[in-house]
Image 1: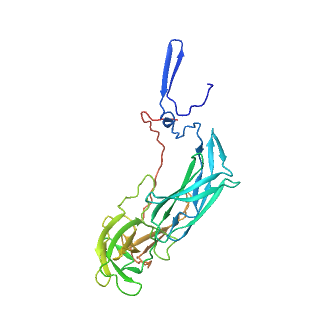
Image 2 (image 1 turned 90 degrees about the vertical axis):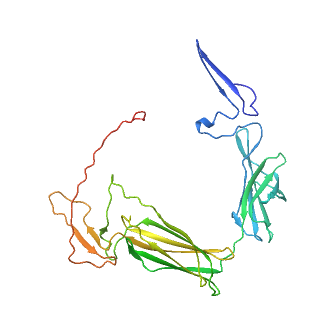
Image 3 (image 1 turned 180 degrees about the vertical axis):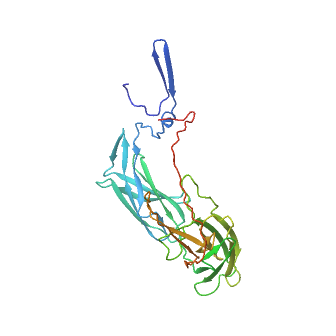
Length: 341
């Protein structure tokens, strides 16, 4: 087809004929590319901006100096080109939508320019937008954030009365919060979070052995909830608080319980601390050590050990040893409507 380019996405009706057979299709101004997974802009006669403004870092505090770099490119008739030696008016927009003109800047031979300015001590906090616009109203922009950081002036200590626990055991977590100058964070708000995740437990000094139940495909490891407890509590006048965690009965394998406590004082500053303990389904642990490959017709050595939590070997413990075999076979299944190769 010959002729000028459409300035805007057109609405077209296309009819195809062959003998007595015919078909048609139509396109709307907002259709065409989305049905094929392509999100593209319509390239009209206007110049499209492909520039950007970025900062040396995205986060600043009031009173700090902001350093920005602008990269000016544009797209014209499908060609991307650098805008060298071109002037841009740079404007700063604060979180309240108030605009401040920063001046006029000219790009260098690399189509870039630099902007530096200092934030006021009482600069409004929030997200800022910086815009650069040329004489043809071609605009590109960037952003940064201004935030204020107040270091906490108190600390939180968290202690657990046990490092190991079994099913049904109760673990006490004690929190102590005090200001750095010594006074307790009296009546502070404490929030406890307790979560758990599977872990591989190996008694000390027996790292060459394999402990615990193994699940081989297609067997599936039992799923248990990772959320244990979430509770709010107020510290006492001495800045102390405690929480009791009970090890659930649905413990199919060793798990690490993590206890997090976050304390908030009267000025709404928060400090957190965390500790963890290991929950075990038994107080005895059977370990096996074997070669990875067995040869038919030859003896297969197996070393067995039974220990307690600390790795101390236990004598006169009966162990039932089984050798199991798993056969794998391939099955092809055809599903109606599914694709086959």
